[in-house]
Length: 332
Image (tube, rainbow, N blue to C red):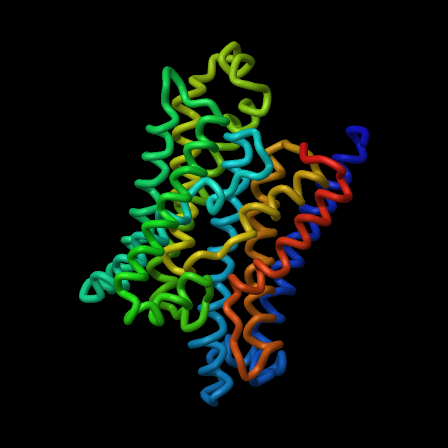
């Protein structure tokens, strides 16, 4: 692929991605257990519809869609940053253990300390953030190479999974309350959840802007980045913390949703290349569109059952990723 073809693809995706996000949002507002026409949606958005349709749109579907957008955007941005830091397209918050850290904190809060359940979002966020620091500390030996970080992350992920299962065994009579959260979903997400998440999510997404340059320089390798005056270890730590911040923010509200941070950035990279000036914003919009679309399908196509979006994404994500690997023949 020559430079002009790549630029044409980038420009096309920059044009199409916002349109896909808008289409996914309109689809989410329109379809569900009760289909609602576009005219009724418009009336509800303008505050002219006091019927049940207006309540469904403004109190149920709209906050859920906006929350899904932020969750998908945060997970995809986190995955894109981690793949750049590790120089490995298989890196994502779930694989290196960041999501598991948030999950363990949330499980403890829900089943072992239910009297503090109101602290669930803060606990999940703190768990993800602390896990990233532990992984980096374990990988540090006069520097923290991407390979060491991934190996430390895999080990920490296994340990956290074992501890989480142990907590659930000990408190087996309370496990039912946490299963839906572990599956990952947006059921019941309201304006309250959105108002909690939005400031952190927007702050993290804004911070991805100054992260673009160091992420691009790290693609050149540590030695080349140092020759260009970059403090590689400091920047790697800061990018990891930012990725953990974004993942923890998403986990705190939506639970353990996988696949988004792994496949969305990788699929976009296959189309437009590794330039983070384009990769990050397109990953953000792609992740937002995917979660909104998948959540709409999960709650409307299986009526009267509402399938957790995390289960649907896992079921669709693994075959899709294997198809990408087969088409490419290898991972770049």
